[in-house]
Amino acid sequence: MTDAFARVIGPIIQHVLEFQRRVAQGDHPGLEAERAELLALLDSAGQRADSARETADAFPLARHALIYWVDEVLINSGWSHASDWRNHILEWDFYRERLGGERFYEMSREAEAKSNADALETYFLCVALGFRGQHGHAPRELQAWAERAYHRIAESARNPDHFLPEVPRAGDEGPLQPLPGPSILLTVSVLASASLLVSLAGYLAATGIMGS
Image 1 (cartoon, rainbow, N blue to C red):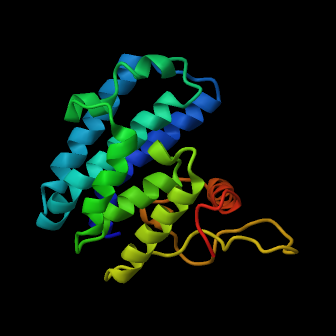
Image 2: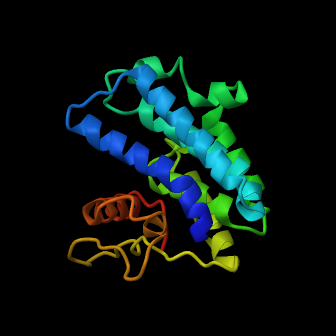
Image 3: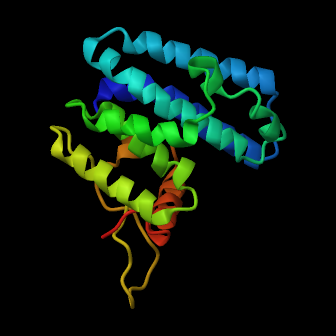
């Protein structure tokens, strides 16, 4: 992912990760305040993206991924307003739809067809950070999507670092660790702590989302 595009989407992802941390610690922001903050961040990201042709071209598709991810994260969180968010989803504000679980993967197909991988890397990152959508109970389909997206990104001029460990083989011992080198998550300004990266890598490997 280019540095310029990471600066576009980084504040949104950072805000949602911080939201999850706050909720886990018992801090529950008001629904309207949270909604206003997210809308402002998305608006700011759009303005930042418009400042350069490359980011402007990639952002509309990436915004779909971010909005579907944000809605799913908030609805499935322990937030006191999680159930109410269903009636205030960002998807409705932007697209007048409630089909994010399906649209995410449909739009990712469009991102795959782009020569610039920034949008597709955003979809990949959203799945790494928990989005499941229509594949929530279909791990094989999710694994197939993740592997296809990864290989498509790897074909681009900006090969992403494989931040997930290989799926452990029988007899392997020791805790799962991210592979060495900068990760796609670190590309967006170290949005998560090292412990979160280890947990994320362990979870995705254990559930078979990324194959060996």
